Length: 325
Image (tube, rainbow, N blue to C red; front, top):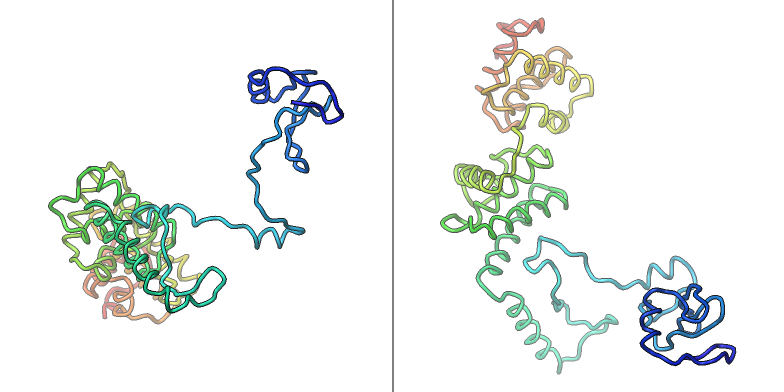
């Protein structure tokens, strides 16, 4: 050790290591700091150099403004549950171009092809990773078809991983548990997606998804609240292109039905569809039962039955005979 201005040397290197960890100068007791220009750890008071072989953890490039610094920043992709290895392994791109965008010579393409093939094989090492690879690709496909957001996809992947770790997949189809995990994530984030909509994009039927959903929600203690008609209202109103006034009326009808206990034991989508149909009548918006039933994924009979219950039990001022068709 030495001083920058030819001050006296320090004898013991063990004392240097102890004091540099405490960030206190052994000579004067003041704080030490890292001098970026010289690459030294120096005392701010007396100038004593505590270390001259300090590793610089900063970038190897220079930036002269904020835009340049942002462009030159090089970081890997964030960790994600949607990839079986959480995105931590290396992946060789399928494009035959180097880092500068130039085409790889024909002599090296065969070697790159073999490296790419072996890399894809090495990434999947056992049966669990093969299971995750297939299931997470199915999750991503279904979420893309349903246009679901990224954080919901991550949540569904985490639920599926928890089911794999708890050995809940044995004896059940991978597609069924993956679809059930996606439905559970939709329920957690209160994104209105019905089992019928999940079954349409999945490769299994509705009964299989429902059975898997009940099983994993019980075993993983997900504690999901039942869906309410209010959860579907905004989406159905948007797809039917109805005005805000109609939405407010439908919301009022649903709240009145909940107070009277008309929603218990009924499907939430059917009650929501009936409330929208009643609000269309009250606000003079022309929407047929068939169109509302198609958007709500229920039958026209369900809409009529729920509508009849609302008119009979709530004072809506609607004649049931006139609007029965």
